[in-house]
Length: 286
Image (cartoon, rainbow, N blue to C red):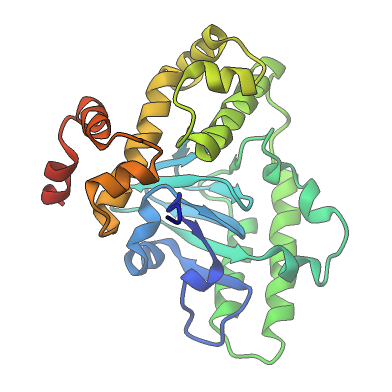
């Protein structure tokens, strides 16, 4: 049976009004209404920029939750897992683009050396709420995206390059070494968890992959996320189980198989323990 994993969305997942292109731009509030499935954990095979102009909420990237507020700019590279919880007044601008689109005009390692696309750095830059320099460039990206000029792609790419270069100027200095190392290890744990949650469910499994002791990994998770490593492992499994129960026609036994459980009855007990209800009851509540 083909494994149904965490959604990895492509640009084609977001139908566009004009000819499909390797880039996309939309207002956040419009985007989440058109594509409500983006509110659950998922990854992309493209780069994502988000400039928040109004409102509040949270944005979780590779297990770490960041405040979402006016002036915050988020940068996601392909493969990073994220989801957000937006307040009703949240407003902003989203930009998606493929690496090939950017590198067509700006070849070399430039795209890969931006600090905000490096997993050892935080994926957010907090600007002043009344900042206008970078916000204006995002507004120009949206205006160009909605235009019908013959050289639209070139102009859009130029604004994109300008947005990234200006963001680099505002990106904060490297945080304290201890904090940076802790966050880096948490992100690595998150990446490993998304890769192995079907087959590895013990803290010691992940601690070994990270070259840490199980106690160290647990202490790290408590300090940074206020949760144990085992709780995060169970949450990841349950989140995927709930996604499959909500958005697929798979039976409970099939969901158990997809998640690496050899015994469906054990899966039901596991789900009840960590979700507080049975898989069937959860599905009926949806």
